[in-house]
Length: 253
Image (cartoon, rainbow, N blue to C red; front, side):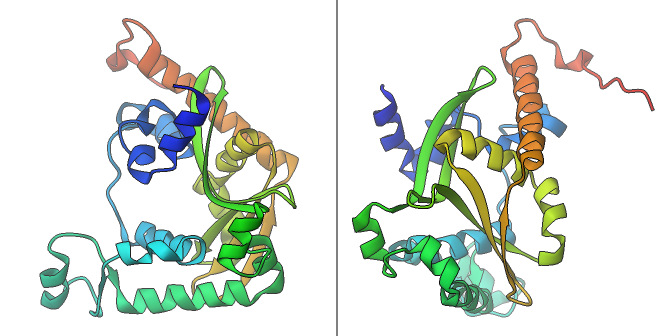
């Protein structure tokens, strides 16, 4: 299978997040490889924050797919009404959808944000010009391993890969960027696409918008994480006769 065929497969979310996509490492593996390498491929439990983030992305970038989300008109996930509709599935609450759609409107009302995301001002026009692409998969080799990524937005005019984020406190986003491995994400995606990386962030409470570009030091910290994650992957998953029970961390305090 050539690279073009691989990327065509990875356009499909089922392939990207499923068995086919598991032949590649991604930024979502970095944290586990650094802290809990034995469980790096254990499925992550879905939580409301991930669902909210996904809906935010979809309603801006792929509004034609918004119907895939189930929305329950309930105030909490503890009510009988929610449980009856959800049937054990994690669903969005109506007030969460209202909050997300308000954030979408705030982002798209900002002229600079809108021009970066939709240079044609209309979703279809932007797609037709080829100036901007959405949910774009790419693969590359880093430190001897194959890595994948799927960019929210690739703006070819500005030569930017743009990632949309929501945050609980925009004043602490720089701290969040380190905690949640956004630095390794920026490094990986800059290598995948050959463009600089930009975060467009909105505060879930104040609706303050932030645009965070990446310093050389930010990329370097990300590169260091990816290198160490690759070393951990090589040790735990590619080293013949390696016994993980004999592994320990050795440091001087």
